[in-house]
Length: 307
Image 1 (cartoon, rainbow, N blue to C red):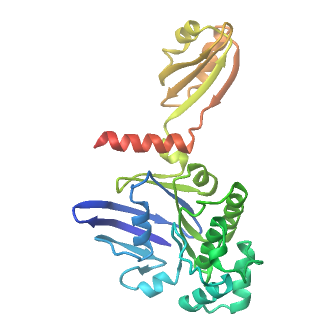
Image 2: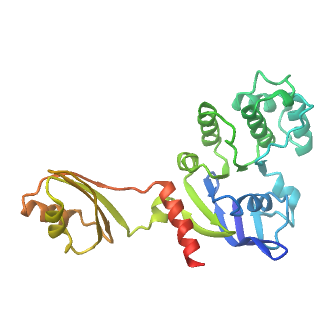
Image 3: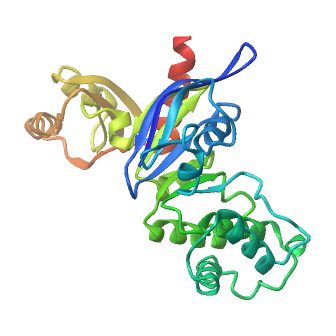
């Protein structure tokens, strides 16, 4: 549905986006992550045709955003970080204006009323947008992005200003739409809850992509083990097991020790056998799944270390 190939953007000598490529499948929700100034918004603006690229191409549903902008943009619903609202209009006037601007062909009233219901704005049609709270302005921005029923949504920091209840409502709306979605955010918990795949950008470069397991690496394992034994006993039993790269003592009391193991393969059978032979009780043994925050920080710090 979306194909980005060798996309770059230069401002003078500053390379804001540096030769990034990725694709998004139909119906996929992808998180576009990065620290402030990483190039997220610049990339979003190029994806929507708001600014031109210095090099590379963006294709939406088979249409190049620069060669056939009208066809490509008709397939995109865009919510920038600051919703593009006309504050002297009521919500109904604004949605009517967006309907005309996009050249939508759906039955007007049924279509716009359905969007208001979907975004929980059905009672707000006669109110001036200038009187909307921050959260309701975000909802109005999402509503305009949905006018014309585009198959692709580009959302730039869409939950800024929303309270926790509104954020959950927003997640539910996006997850049920079935649209191809790119969600730019620096709220990693939001991306983890909503997105099936992540793209991480830093200093204009795409430094990691995939779901969490792909970004961690299919051949990397980390385990947390709680044992009824002392630290020195545990070290003596486990240090020489093939596949264990690193053993860390996380916590120790008089009767138990909790360790973390970094491994290149699944070593649980060998661990269990060694401890069973030594009659050391295993209290817990679990695979430690890294959080998205840990993956993000590791990717960003690793990219900086390579420079």
